[in-house]
Length: 457
Ligand code: PMP
Image 1 (tube, rainbow, N blue to C red):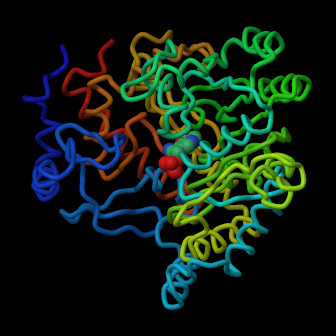
Image 2: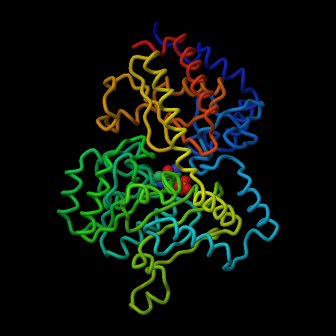
Image 3: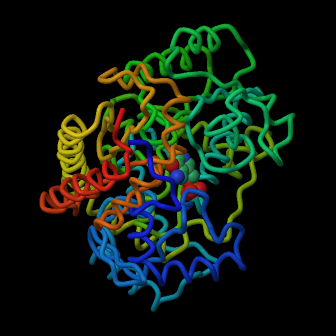
């Protein structure tokens, strides 16, 4: 049976039937926002859901449908939605004021927590987002080394600013994506984590490399798998060559372990960027690292050395409300086994999904590390092959396959929401019952797909 086209798809019809209010919101939004969206990752055909409220592992849309949520606030919510501690802290701070335009106690406490939990954090500076934190990391590395080149890895996401906007999903040859200057792209050297030898010899062979930046568990939080050994190798060669090693811990920070991926793997970078969990689900990020590097932001140190300081502003840096939420989150993560619980629940989900995929599909596979899971629906992959051997192109292609969109619609009809990778992030408040519900829902979604001829090889 050949696959059913979207216009005749019962899955799409069921989704439309479930979500008429989301459909009308989406029509309205299209006259305000390009594509009706405020974030590229929320694209879903025929339209995305509109969510009204969320609590714990669940969220509810404007049609009253309940979903087990694996978006997790794009990774910000390892403690689930509307956690009591974060609610209490932010409410209390709202009453006291949302912006003092001044230093305050919470920023110091917040920074001290980051310093106590993150191995590389001799000094910390808060930003408003992960994009900003990476921008600062790259700038500090260039200011410190006086070198121009930035080594990045294909498929590793570091936000949307110019230095990192290409070579992730598109422009894998390193050419600039629209709006990015060629001169900026020319200073970026793209490597592949699958080819450690080529990367290491590049780092050994050039004298103009300021920094290497990477997601330490692999691109898009391990959707693009990477060998752990690569971290040690990169640490050794960057230390030898005076190159700044930057871990982008925007997702892995306070998730993989309380000390992030660097804490988990025992490899300490020179700089690390954080966002998402660090602010407890509110906007916020930070750069943390060796004092010598963050000293480029220090008025007195720079004056003493006779060097020009790196500038840093930002209206919402360490905003008091975000600080209150961040402190509450980090205190919970420091004192509980939340990271381990999230990882254990994700392992249960991966196991259940793979059981179903073995039974019902010829070549689907669920992969992930720590608290992530990804569904590979790519018929071109050799069955049972090691994810480490998969190519970036084939992994990235999965998100674009029509069957992936249909799978997401079918899962939503069955009460599960996940991202378009396709996959998701598990939190510490997902229970075994949530995971078992999800695996059952996946079974029913596969049945719907089979009925439309999507599972035949
Ligand atoms: N780095 C990584 C690894 C990310 O996943 C993200 C966001 N998804 C960013 C950086 C950018 O963070 P933000 O959206 O806070 O700018």
